[in-house]
Image (tube, rainbow, N blue to C red):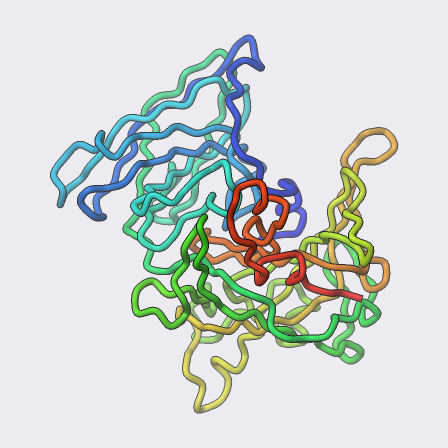
Length: 385
């Protein structure tokens, strides 16, 4: 499970920059990007480097610190067999890194626009792995000046689901006064005193000059929520959330994960510089697996056009203290800022969608000469009072 602390290590997506000029002595990582499945021809490939303590989705909330692009024309090998080509990223500082990859088969990825910096249906993703059995990403630890070669980044088959584009379902504001006391160890919600608050997200298609996402009813790569009813121990029962207090009210460990990021207050004021607030909303999956007529069982993966969510009025506040050091505190109920919160949905595949986003930015639309998508604008942020 993603922790709020882990997610807040990367406050928001930032495009990678060339860091080679920043350090007198640098690190180079290199190896082969390999793929054994996929269309012919394959698209351009990107190898992305992340700081190990700030990993990408779905394990974290990080942005790449650097990248290398390999061209579609460079793929060697037979169209039906193993294909590969070399990659290299230079100019890194000493540190611990993760290496991931994406093959952009439909040509719509860009690391320089947050709305385009994700894999879409038909793209292929992978990583430099610690184990082929566990599929765990491997940490590469380096000390400048150093060159590490032989890093094979294996890419999986094409993704069969689209990014989870959505709008906020019709609702009134969520209530912060329903919050209970919280601790850093767990969210201390008393089951008897907790009234669960619900809201829905609805899957949508996007038809925009910048990006196209198929509608939820499309027969080819529809935009839907990819639901997984976790059953890690294989006992045939959907796992409870690992937090004791969430498990006590019957909430289950289900993908996707949904996070709420404080965006602005009623007057439009954004958070003070250096301050970030994050809450989690939990997928309410019980109707999908409870009862004799339930359509799914533990361990099932399926898609849905609606995502029912439980609002948990507790979250993490991260800031810089008076001494200039990073600090954090867990807040609940009215201690959290009232206003409007962005909604981030994270599929287990690492595919994401956030509302509001660049498609609904009127100022950006004017500058770029494109249409404003009101369903993705600040008017679609989540009201919390």
